[in-house]
Every structure is written in C-alpha cells, then in structure tokens.
Image 1 (cartoon, rainbow, N blue to C red):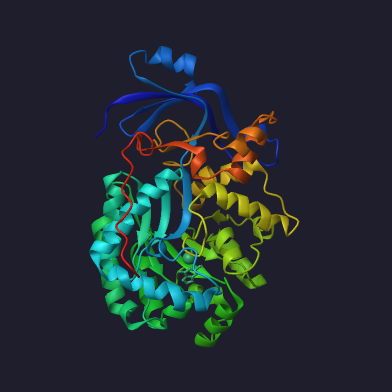
Image 2: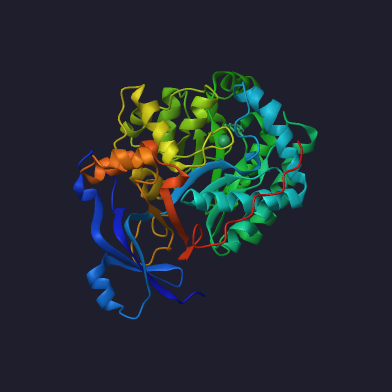
Length: 445
Ligand code: GUN
Ligand code: ZN
C-alpha cells in the first residue's frame, strides 16, 4: 500500500461528460493554476493549487507548470505480440496476417521472449502517456502471464486475454475448443481482478475459430460476465466474404458472434467498418462497442470507420491504436489520423471530443469510468503531463494559439511521445521520473 502523498501542480483538464460541440464548456473542468493531490495510488483531491496547498501544507509539490495535466490515455485495442510486426510492407488484412503476423506470434511460445516484449511495451506505453491498454496476447498461456506480470510490476491497469484460435492459422498457433477454454479459465482464476488486472475473453475472429470454439467462448462469457470480450468485426471485404463462407447459416458477420452469446456491453469489436443495417441495430441493442483503429484502417487499406453514423444510433465507439497493423503507439497520433479519416467522410473530430475520447470516453466504453479516465477523487492516479510546445514546429504554432481548444488541437495533430513530459501510474512517475526501461536485446528474425 502506497501512502506517500504528493501534490502535482499544473494546468488541469478533465472531462465530466462528452462535449456536445467544439466550445461546450459544461463538459470539462479546466483549472489554470491547479493541483492534484495523490496518495496511496489514488487521486485524493483535484482543485486549485491555492486551495490544495493550504489543505495539505506538508505535502511535497511537483511543479509541472506550464504543462497540462490530464487523465492517462486509454488504448482499447492493441496486439502485444505484434511489436515487431509494426511497419510490415505491402499487404491487406488476410495476407498481412499470414505473411507477417502469424509467423511473428509463434515466437511467443517462448515465455522469455514474451517477457521481454511485455516489459518493453509497458515502458513504451508509459512513454506515450498511455496508462491503460486492452491488449491481445498470443495463443500461448504464458504470453498472458508475461503481460500481466509486467503490468503488475508498474501497477498498471491492463486488460488482456489469451487469443483463442483453432483453425486457419499455423499449427503452432492453434489451440482446441477444450484447451482454449481450459487455459482461459485458468488465466481468469489467476489474474482477473487481481490488483489492476482484468481479463478479456479473446476469440481472435470468426475465421480462426470453429463453431465449437465460439461455443466454448460463449460458455466462458456466461460463466464470467464481469470479464471483457474482445474480437474483430468487418475490417475488410475479403475477411467478411471468407467469414460468411465459413458460417453460411449466419445472417451476417456479427450474427456469428450473436449466435454464440458473445455480445454485450463489455464486448469490444475491433474495426467494425463495413456493417449491414441489421448489424448496426444489433450493436445498438446489445451495447457492444465498436473500436475505431484509424492508423491501422489506413495502413491496411481497410476502410473508413463511420463514427457519426454509429453515434447517431446511440452506439458508444472506442478508439485505439491496433499496433501492429496500427502505425503508432501514440494516442495523440491516433487522434491525428482519426481526424483525417472523419474529414474524408465530412465528419468532424473537434479537439475537446478527441481528448475526451482517449480519456473518459474510452473509460466509459470499458465500463471503468469510476476508476480511470477522469481526475475525480477516489479514482486511480494515472496522469499524463502534456507539453504542447515540445517540438520546434509545435512551439512556433503555439506562439499563435490563444485558446485551450487550439492548444489541444496542436497536441492532437502534431503531438506524439515528445509531447508527453511525464506519465504517472498509480501515482508513481514512469517516464522521466523513472529509470527508462532498457531496449530489449534484439535477435535476428
Ligand atoms: N483480425 C484478426 N486478427 C487481427 C490482427 O491481429 N490485426 C488486425 N488488424 N485484424 C485482425
Ligand atoms: Zn486487432
């Protein structure tokens, strides 16, 4: 139990609701000379520096002025065995999986390799200001162990699960309906709810699971309704056609997951790009969450996510990097590409909604807004410190910026790891304030 208190001073921004428009001042709290009192890994109070420094006079102050303090970013879809797949040339989804991704994921059969990559990723996420991620592990049980262990060492709130896949993948990456169920069950018992760990039941997608395996995944969901569920949906036209050929009785792609009881408010559906009207009705009815992965959707040429269309139906969209098809670990760069994807469709992503999305918005999508994504007292002390003048082009642009929204838009379009001055996880600095994690020893492919 961490009891040490510390007072962070800086400009404070946190959201209390989704901003309705580009100037919706009712949706956020901004304090020019603000402070956050941390203690025991939690946020104890958020307010003006003047007030909090008088309330807690003996507490050491870390002065982050003139930087902006916000809740840590949340990435709702990333593949941790793909950190050495990022930037692999030339293919769209199915060829990309077969040519690059599946061969790479076989390396996670080695627990030592998984440990090195998991440890590296935690350091990288902290460097990027991301304090929570929902990750796919590999099919190997030990890959989940490695990931949760690395997260626990930094006390990070992380969600992951063993990928279940029993067909249309290399032999070395296949489980069986029974072994996939048993391993998931063991991992849930060992990790779910332990410290800040959460388990996601993870059938990779309909193509790589037999009907028997999806049935077993549905049994897990019924037995563990407090776990998340993650899979992929309608990312690519060839993927959809292949899925429907494997499940000819299904009314559509989402109907496959519906049939096996995989849909509910805790279900995260990566991509969800090419949807039929019935599928959209089903998303609205079940509360399942589409996950927008802009850099990945552009990189693999998958298509344009219809954020406004889904939102108009009351559907809650999450946003994510999807590394290694995604091309950046940065949620800021993810917002940059999200802005452009929406521009191509005549939709707008204004900066207040953008920063709400990667903090409270993704927390709401995960059902975790009572713990992360805001700076409310009693929530977990995951905080990012942002410098909108971190690079020369940013500083030059900032010299002409007059409003908070302008500053946020500079961060959204030009920001990356360099704009993250510090990242606190459970109240502990993990970037400049911590010894940086060593780069892993690189082995030839
Ligand atoms: N569909 C099934 N597996 C994957 C994956 O690893 N990445 C992406 N982008 N789509 C998938
Ligand atoms: Zn994915």
